Length: 189
Image (cartoon, rainbow, N blue to C red; front, side, top):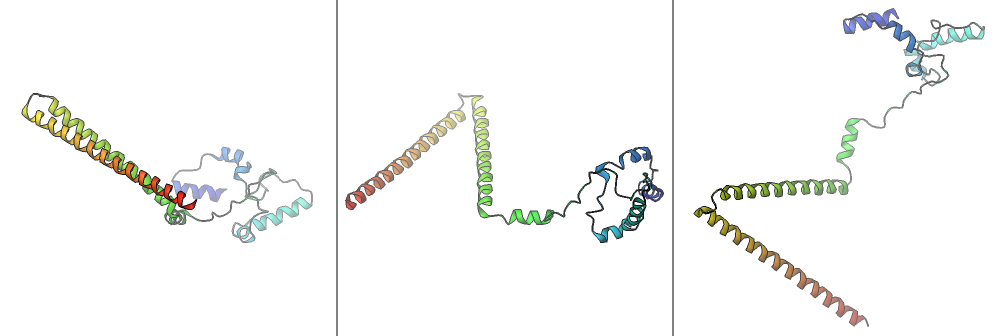
């Protein structure tokens, strides 16, 4: 305990002032180490095996152990925490796995980001049109405002004509496909 206090003071520059709290919580399962599940090398490294042998011989003689005689790192509680296994892979491997994921996931992400970008472009175009309209609405009788309005009307007409032509082309294609399907069904009979 004295070495731990010295190390704490060396690392933090402050003396350890929570000794009473530590005495209360040190036997809780959260702070216990199950030495039965621990590897022999780790027990040796933590010097738990030597003290475990001393305490086990004391237990064999029927001597009651108090808190100071206990094996460091273990507790009286019947509950013990299992040592957590090492993760399958770390952060870097997870990132590599994420970027080497199947194409379908990356295609979905690309489509999602494309929709976001398209929506942002539409919103920007709408805001630009709104600003321009408000600019010419200040003086609607001016020559520039009348010219702008006629240009916007012409743009709207052209866009409507293009939409109509596209729909006519789609309708013609659907009718052609329906006619081809009828011909195939007649030839099968």
